[in-house]
Amino acid sequence: MTDREIIDLIDRSIAGEFEIDPEKMTPEKTLFQDLELDSLDIVDLVIVLEKAFRFKIREEEAIRNIRTLGDIHSFVVRKKNELEKPA
Amino acid sequence: MSLRRVVITGMGALSPFGRGVDTLMEGLLQGRSGVRNIPELANIQGMRTRVGALVPEFDPAEIPRKFRRSMSRMSVFATLAAKDAASQGGIEGEHFRSGRLGVSIGSTVGSPRTIQEFFDDFHADHSVERMKSTLFFHIMNHSCAANVGHAFGITGRIVSPSAACSTGCLAVGYAAEMISMGKQDFMLCGGADEFHPLTAGTFDIMNAASVRHNDSPGSTPRPFDAGRDGVVCAEGSGVLLLESLDSALGRGAGILAEIIGFASTSDPESIANPNADAIARCMREALRDAGLGPGEIDYVNAHATGTALGDIAECEAIHAVFGDRVPASSLKGNIGHAMAASGALEISASVEMLRRETLLPTHNLEDIDPSCGSIRHVREVTSRPIRTLMKNNFALGGVNSSIILRRFHR
Image (cartoon, rainbow over the protein chains, first blue to last red):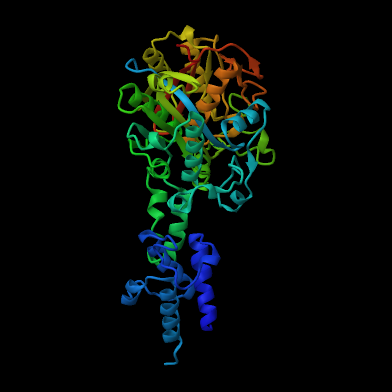
């Protein structure tokens, strides 16, 4: 997957799950204030990403620092690249 | 219930005919059937019944996602029915937040659809890693009541009576008692259930589900009819807004009917089979609660689901209490048996019968079973000035319930 494809899949998955207008899915948007998610949604957000990208991230320290949609883009792109790196 | 008078000031329904009590009444008055063939049932091994009465497709998006995410199908039904009941009653935010408005809405079980979805996934690898944060709120026993409470910002009591087919009637009766005792001024009350093969299968394996009319679904169930062969499972929700008479008069609310008596009794003889003496005892207790004699009841809305044993037992009980004088009918011939919702849906229709001075007949009753012949059946839509009626519901588990409604007069 290209980085663009990864970002598109993230935005599509999150917008679909949380019924967010796709127009609002821009990287600077904060999850709590701008996209109006809450703590229950964040639990489900992890599950949505794990399902979309077939990885497990719940125990990753880095996800605790995520504040914006752009943070998710960066985190997932980095994670996917790590996993796809030839051994 | 002699402390405070309790009246009904709003009603909401999701039934196999669609949304609204008027829609329900239209279908009943036109003698339509909400029963359909359910093709998916044919794929279930051992399932002989292929019919059900489902709520038609609708868009639940009017409930904001923040509230809807914790709702199963049945909680969505209950929320929309509660919304319509509150709207008809003219109830607004200040009432919801007053602490004087409570909720009494039950279901037979938590959402079986959600439970199935969870275990389908769980059994793949015994993992909870894909479990959504809101799953529990779909399956907890007080899911419908709690979700209604949250959706409207209600700060009063939340109770969730559960007794299978008696649930709706119990929820309304207990709500009326809370208002009568002065614990609450308003109650949103009733029941909800969603169709699932678990329910249809439960009746099927007990030889109590309709299996001979799969190709002509509109002709089943057949309460009191010689050709009846069992229950047709349905889904939906009925919710009523109850209110103390003083409150309703004080704010000029439209009063639809008054609740004047209620009883619930246990029948420990059998956990599955209905008993005429026990049913009669419940009906007499309701009369005693209302301070009425049997001669003062103008109509009985029967539980009658179309099973061999249940219909006979209820007929014997009605005859024992009222003789053959009082007209009686069951609405399940039209809308099937919506389990926890059935009581509240049938109370709503009964209120409309009082208001419209019109009795609804038992749909599909063509050839009265001689064993059900001792009472006076309503065979067609009948104009009749009725003042007071009794509504029965009886449940697996031996939980019986009867409630008495009266046209409102100061």
